[in-house]
Image (tube, rainbow, N blue to C red; front, side, top):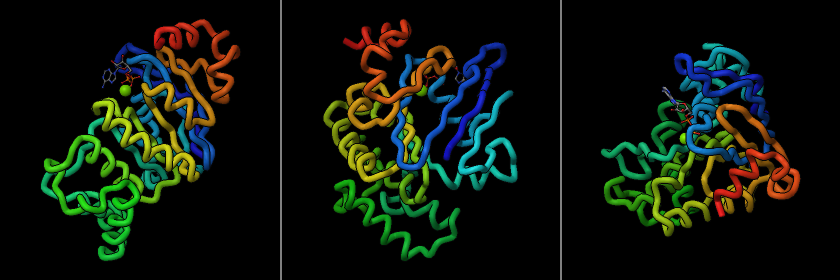
Length: 241
Ligand code: ADP
Ligand code: MG
């Protein structure tokens, strides 16, 4: 289980996360919704150890990200896909995917390359395996980014607005892949603006407002009276229509 308890994070005097509690159980798809600036990316960055925090704790399968000796184990269990693809420009798609399993997990290169090609096939990109990022469309690059995360065989996949930089057609390509992952048991914490999509794939919705996690409920409840009875959720949902 991935567990966030009483997480508080400030930048200077600005409190960005205020007592956030969240759990993600194996097999669950949980979407994180909230306005821009509500702290969603900061939450993801705290979970994967890219930001320190003042109070609370985060454990990934029991490994505490705030303990230097446990961070590597915690990180090994989760993989993050960001809005910006961050692929290495001088490496092909398959080389980008294979890099971390070889360098970090010390796995045999030939085996990893074969797996990377199989992952590209799963996302419809077998024919682009040897292309460089500059030769790929945005949607293709993000699909490579997802393969790169999956190549680490993470227990938890964290996705931070992975479609925000894409046009609608490319967004659809990427969401199709995520739908398959969601329905085949991949555990995901999914930060998104794609509300309809979040509704269609998530077991639970959590809602952040100004750093406070003010709702955490089954998806059907969030989009029904129970969610709408929270004024801030109602306001957020009404703005979308
Ligand atoms: P979201 O992803 O929900 O849009 P963020 O987590 O990116 O929100 O940001 C939450 C708040 O923290 C915002 O007010 C943002 O300006 C602030 N913030 C984020 N990163 C930093 C930083 N490195 N330094 C100072 N303030 C930051
Ligand atoms: Mg963000």
